[in-house]
Structure formats: C-alpha cells, structure tokens
Image (tube, rainbow, N blue to C red; front, side, top):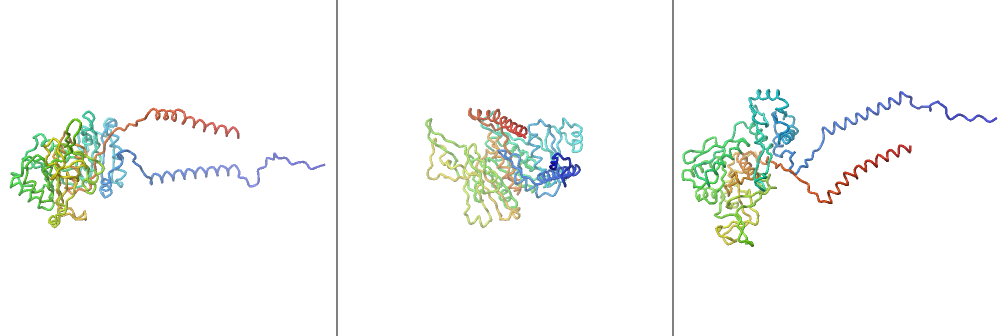
Length: 496
C-alpha cells in the first residue's frame, strides 16, 4: 500500500511566523512612526518656510525700509486693531498687522477688537487708553507713548481717469511705520511754512498748507506758519518750506534765509511758481548750484485740427538718488506750468564747499524747455533747453559717503512747479515724493520708500473660445477624470 498523501489543509502555522500579539505590536509601531514623521514634517514646515506674494502690487509684503527698521528694534511695540469685520479696510489692516508681528522678532504684539461683537473688551480698552473711538483704526504703542490712527487716514483718494472713479490708495504701512518711528524718536519734528509772499490764489496757499499739515500728521512732524519779514527762524525749526511764492524775498528775508542755511542741519524745500518774478530767491538757489531757467517745459505739435501745445509734463523719478529710488518704477505728471532747472554739477567752487547736487525728476524725452512759450506753435530753437530736462533737484552741503556721518549735512530740495500739492491735481506719487523729500531733509532715510499701495479690482477678460474651453474643463473634463479614476480602482478591486 502506498503511503497516504499528507493533507495540505494543516492548521499549524509556519515556523517563525509572528503571533497575533506580534502583528498588533508591529501595526502599533508603524502607526506611531507615521504619526512621528507627520508631526515632525509639520513642525519643520511651521518653523522653516518660504512665502511668495503674488499680488500685483505686493500688497502683502512690507517695504524693505519697514523691515530693516523692525529688525533693528529692541523695544516692544503693541498694535491693536479696533474695527468691525465688515469694514472696507479690515482685511487690509489684518494682513498688514500680521506682517508686522511676523517680522517683529517677537517684539510686536497684536490684538484685534471688534467693537460690535466684543463690546465689553471695547469699553475696557477705551477706559485703559482714554480713547473715545469715533471710528475704527489702529492704536500704536511704543516707547511709553501711543498714537491712534483712524481708518480714514489710511485711505488716499486721488484723481483717477475720470471724476467718477477716483484712485484709491491704502497707506496703512506708511501710517503705522511713521507712528512707530515718531514714538521711538520722542520729540516731534517741526517745519515752518513761509507765509507773506503771496500765491497764485489765497485758496491754493491755504490748500497747500492744509495738505502739508495732513502730511505731517501722517509722517509725525508739525507744520507751523512763519513770516520771515517780522520773525527770525525759530531754534526748534527742523526745516523751512516755501511754495509758490508770488512776491520776491526782501533783503532782510534773504539775509535770514542765508543765515539759516549756514547752520549745520538746515533743511529747505522750495517749490517755484514759474510765472513769478523772484530774482533774490533765484540768486540764493543759484549760489547753491540750482539755476531755474526762464522757460516752460512743454510739448507742441501741428495736428489736423490746428496747433497743440501741452504744458502738462510727463516725467519719471531718478533711480540714483535715495529720495526717489523707491519711486523709480512709477511715472508722474506735473500739471500747470513747469520751469526746468540747471545743475552746476561740475562747479569746482561748489565742490570745495562740500556741495553735491543730484536730479530727482526728469521730464520725458519729447518735452523741451521753451523760452518763447507764448507762441501758438513753438519749436525747438537756439536758447531752448533740450532733454534731459530736470524738474526737481536735491542739494546737500557736507555730504559724505558714510550715512552715519551725514546727520549734520544741510539739505535743499527745489521743484520747478508749485502745483504738486494742489487738491484738484494732486497725484499720489507726487505726494509720496514730497513726503520722501521731507523725510530726507529730516535725516529719516529709513522712512523713504514706505509708500501707499493702490487698491483696485482686476478683471479677467475672456473671449468666446476661452469661455467655452473653461466650461468643458470644469463641467466635463475634471469630473470625468475623477470618475475614470474611481472606476479603475473599482475594477482593480473586483478583479482581485
């Protein structure tokens, strides 16, 4: 009889195979290892990551000047947003404040308070800081001081393509950084606005003074009137501002101005009215190497409808000067009439005095400086200024290469147009230029370049073919791919 065939259905387990406990322990270890890897990866991604701001105007990135200032701070800064969540600027303020916290080396503390949803905290906050809060805004605390920035001070509305659609700029970073710098500096800086020299109109002079005061509230400096005919320059003056003078300086006023300019930290901003006769003022500027020409920067051409003469000047900002380098990607326009400036950059006598000159704003190449500007169709002729035409310039006496040693230099900014701050024609980039110039005059280079950012809506234009393609992708292709993947998984499992 043959030996019986051994059964293949033996219930005995293979030798060395793990038991039920071993299998459970193995699964537990795998789960714990997976959780450890998952937690470690999340921890590393939280600590080390890279952010990309893909918005058109880098709306969610702080300016390099603000970043450098925050990195040098050693004192704690507190930022509190008091605003309703349905406010038009709440989302902008929220993302901006988070950027200050993220880049503040742990020294920037932030808080958000909704006065509608958190009434008890709002009343407590008002009592602690002695605020009435007529509107929302941001409270900045630093260096044992505080400053409240209302929401309406974070929005600039300027002339757009038409009167019904003004351009809106969000200046939250500008306002908050200026407030922090002001609180850290302590004493408020002061400019004096020279009065008594007339203007194109009384209302324009009032508007310019009001605009400068508003700019001072934003940039943490004060602006006060000063009549040189009866008063000397006060000792607390950090700078003088003379805009659109219709009448010339008297001998006494010129002597006062020259005496002030002779001090170590003198700062002067001059905005010229080309239609005014001011030989004494021009002689002072010429002694500094800036020569205003008796011309008008314009563009003229003959068209089918007759001669066309354009006094509004398109211009660009210089990228080689700290005042305007942050604006070098933008273009601007000077309304009204503008005169060009000559710069004596090669004058040896000025160099011996330690005076350095630099152009700030340059007219577009199609414009020229016309001396016969009353002609209906002027053409470039002998005596006219040809490109490059300088519309604004900076003068620095005592300039040195080391920025730390430039604190005692005297600084002068000259603009060949007095309309930059007029309410009807004011552009945001021109206001930013004046703010940068004043900060440069105050030796606040760290604030130059912190400028408002435009807020706008961007529409994607699609033609019929593109819309049809988008429909097929979203309505059929994408769901079809998901359905095909699911069917393949089902088929694979059924076959196994």
